[in-house]
Length: 227
Image (cartoon, rainbow, N blue to C red; front, side):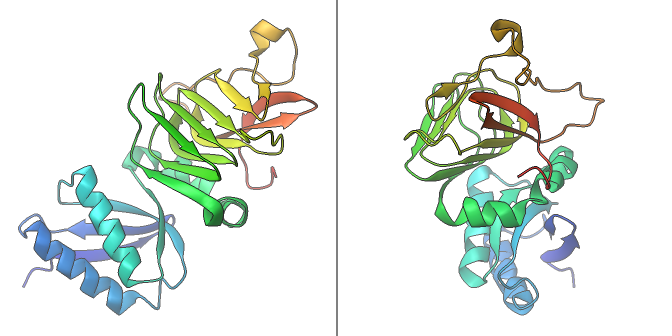
């Protein structure tokens, strides 16, 4: 008899293989059963998740994540797309730091924003998706984006210069931390950090972080030893 759901362990978390021959409601029940059986193995884990086999809508992905978190102690921090896995795993190396400083005191926004959309949070903000041109994210604390940042982002909006903005890719000059605006190098004439645009598709995409240093907002590659 064919299984409705198969759970595979990956370096970034878990990979769910969903049998397309089953109805979504049947897959939901099978996911609950599988994770109840494996709950002890994943206890208190903060992980990424990816899907295969069944064409899921964003709302169905959210439903699956919700039932997994409702029936286990697992905390899903991001949905992994195939092309994002390597880059997201680099960012995930700092997971313990993020959990301590951000994730336990943050608002979550699931899914990419639309141009013209604006998301505010009085505490930290975690976006599971992209922030495109024309979109704005503003947070009283830190901002972590599991996707690409091309719009406007302000961290530490109540004047905290110690806040930061981290993303899998930063391709914008519209950044602000506290009251300090990011000024691209070609405009400022300073060498306090260049304007890091998305690298070409054949190059490795490196997660980036924007933070304040010496009174200026700089951007640099995000590594686990940076902070």
